Length: 116
Length: 113
Image 1 (tube, each protein chain N blue to C red):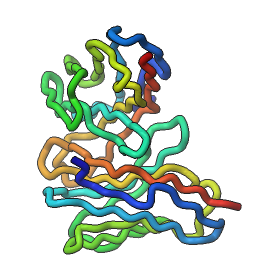
Image 2 (cartoon, each protein chain N blue to C red):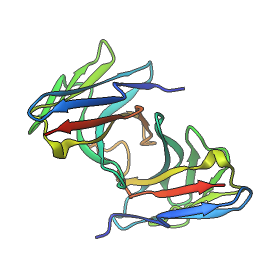
Image 3 (cartoon, each protein chain N blue to C red):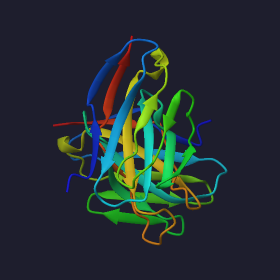
């Protein structure tokens, strides 16, 4: 049981390049989300999904694209990388929101992305 | 706009002391208030959480105090240990079925031996 797995762990890109950050979970969680973490800013929600085929925008969605074709996978795509997207990216998953048991979000260990 | 404000940004405590981190939220419907602990190079991990109909929750050395009328909540770490040195984030979950979490800015705690 690996939990939430993110790949790659580190990546350096040049401005204008595109890439996909991978996220996979093996807990059969319906809810998945992407956050970026920047110093002094906490974690900010980029995009989220409440189930396969359903995605929505978070606080900072510009420059990012997501899709959710399976329950397990939730990739994040940078369309044209910019230096402002240098950050640490975290993927998280949880059981269906709104349940009585208040399931916590489980986080991966992040992808550290630098854009030159 | 930051709907959850966290303070202090950094905190240094002697071993055995009490660490206190505060958070305040603005006028949004939140239904769940978790605290996450993050070690360097790792993702945040749930430490303790509280629902707004409860004023205090204790798990071992960790206690959340919740003041609904003041829209404030805090984390107390009793008998702080060097192993508690980490970054702590408070968060608030938006009511409804989106599961959206709004995080505070984070507090870096250093516990000196």
